[in-house]
Length: 377
Image (cartoon, rainbow, N blue to C red; front, side, top):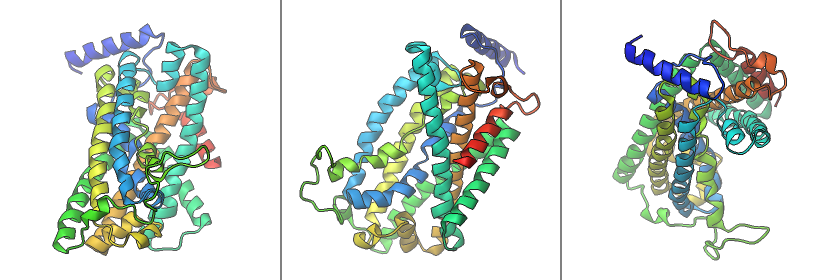
């Protein structure tokens, strides 16, 4: 260890001590790994693959123009969270922030709300890859029994990775993020270039309402209904979330006070730019909007019809890897929240869940508990 690293660790240890804590994790995560946590939780591949078809039915292709608006709004949220993470680089993120900015009771409530959300979210993400992507990739008929079996296997694999090593879990995630960025950017360019060469692009689809009636399209809605354009905001709102997950591993990040805030806002910016470019390319190459709106896998259909089956299968592999990494990061975030609340004796069984395993350097009991609960859900 260099003198600079030693000085840095002393400073970070002192920061933790100022909040009444001792350093218990190894600080192994660097700038890209921290960024990858936020980017992977957002996972534009997961969000767009699972919601693009819904947007075609809710708001038509025109609905993608809500994406930039959501990005701007979420960027402001990310900047606020980044400021909090810089001042309080602690595991437990929103639980810690509310406990210290408001009062411990509100923090406890936010902690439990976050815990429930994360548990359900892991199941939802892993089920998505098991029920939609893997059957398409391996060409077998999807059934609920198969989907739940594959989901259970995926959860066990993620749990074992987290137990074994945080460093290796984040390395796998970083590889997945690199693959996702290169894959989506490359796919976007190929859709436009090949689509133009084959005369498959239609600029009018960027501004078409598709199967959605144009009358009253921009209406806000009523007390019991929402206008098509307003519904389309769910595309970005569903996707651009979780960037604050980087803050939950702040106590395992080097120079957390500067690295974590950067990871949060930069993951939103890059996700926004790359995601919107991909959405534009999908609209341009969408072909028969009516048929596409009836499909359960419209994104895969567009890729296959424009670039062929081989590229379509490669894309599905990237999607599978990205969704797996998304679930992995959410799982890690869940374990750190359990551990952080247990450290403050504010979680049932805290005596066990606040322990960090000496050999692996991970919260073993908290991870096993989270894995068991996720499997049950």
